[in-house]
Amino acid sequence: VIGLPPPYWAFAWAGGQALARYLLDRPETVRGRRVLDFAAGSGLVAIAAAKAGAARVEASEIDRFALQAIALNAHLNAVEVTVLAEDVLADTGGPTAERRWDVVLAGDVCYERPMAEKVFAFLRAQARAGALVLLGDPGRAYLPKAGLQRLTAYSVKTTRELEDSDVRNAVVWQVEG
Picture 1 (cartoon, rainbow, N blue to C red):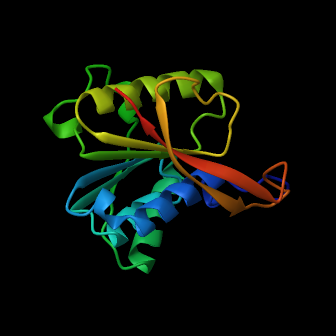
Picture 2 (picture 1 turned 135 degrees about the vertical axis):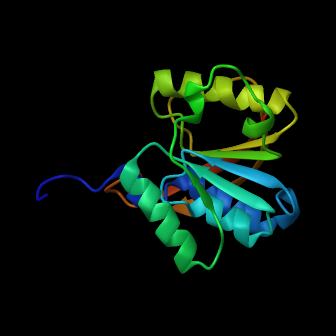
């Protein structure tokens, strides 16, 4: 439709780019492990996890068009990514055998207060259950101030159409349980 902005998932946001780079630079982070790319968008981080040797990669997303983009992008990159067409946050029972991953990845999820609070509660529950939880964030307004350990940062080129600068400093955080 003319005049509508492109969908949010059609961009490689800075936090997701930082997570993908982190996994490709440190494949031992996911090698042989079960991985969830939460709020996967186009599947960039899921694809990086698969390329880094994850045993199983699931990408969760609630947008039906993003789900198709994830499947297509995984195919084009010759990797296997299982698409979860559901809101994993809706399960309030906490991690279960079928909802437990070795590594949980989330990029650019702290842009709205209600979502950031709900997502961070989910991520902390996953960390308490034993998952390595990594969050990529370029300084979004609702990034929690506690419960995070800084691992590294990347300067990520951006566009003024999406961000307030041409380069964002995107940090990879480990979420503590």
